[in-house]
Length: 478
Ligand SMILES: [Zn+2]
Image (cartoon, rainbow, N blue to C red):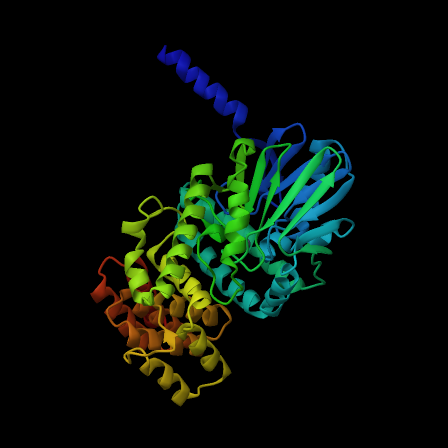
């Protein structure tokens, strides 16, 4: 009995598991997953979080969901899709959202109608504006990874991951350096859209604000497939979560929580016809229960945020009543769900329901414009005054500090993190972030002091120890 059961399990795994072919694309293993005769998913790599492209054969032509962001790779994948589906009448490309690892290969489908949310184009422009920062980041990161790889034994599993990561990063650097024309969606919508392609229907739902401004979900009833882009996943298949890493109402983008919940709930109601949920990267998996738990979570927070305003309660009260660990234990520890993200999401809701404004956003704007120290002080001082027109969230200030850092604005990032240290002196994480920004500014002594303070507050911090070793190593070399 046990043997037969084992054989059955093995057989069922062979029948449903993605087929790893011996083929490679750009030096990375190619994977082709067949759902049924008219739907496949292709991606490259075994250890990295690359974008997966889904392709459908319909009566009126081929429909593609997302590109990997690299025209060289997407050109190859287009040929693989045509071969696997035995036709090449490419008709529509749908972008799940604006990020370059989903839209960067749109040029390969310039002969198709490109479909996406109306905010995709603006997001693509913002990404293009950050091009120099992206080039600099890759230019620094690639030699670091080469250094890490050189220290590992040939057969170390981590070496294989870094080798794949390096291939992908070199490709991404090449794309960023090449620049070139961008191809935003030519057919857009704001709430919902249905595309009828004869025997196949594509239902598009706006679910933006939880990963980028322009996220959509795509449901294809004839295949029972629901694609959720990069908004959520509840299982990681590798230790490189990448783009799907956080479930959070993004600061600085438009939020329409009632619309988001309306569309999510419409999808939840289709439970019986949803066979498989597909996140935008191959290494994330999403169960229906995981999807449902996230919708119910946002719904509960939104209801309570509205009730808190009516009752005249404070943001702090709302935060305390809705700690992730105690109020939503089913999501605690789930990919992308953290106490910090929870607080940021509550903060974003608070902005839309109360008269208070986000101190993090106000400070970000002031620091970005140039230091109007008096105006900054005026906001910080409100923290202790009873009637504040601003609310203060540690995680939100931290997130926006990192936005400076990613934009190669280390001085501004340090200024932001210094304020966070002043506001939340008991948090090890704010010192950790400050250390990173000070190191990027070249102020090694101050960076060391910040990391030491962070470790003092949290001796278990892995980044603190690693960074102290790195900074001290650099110092002794120079
Ligand atoms: Zn993304």
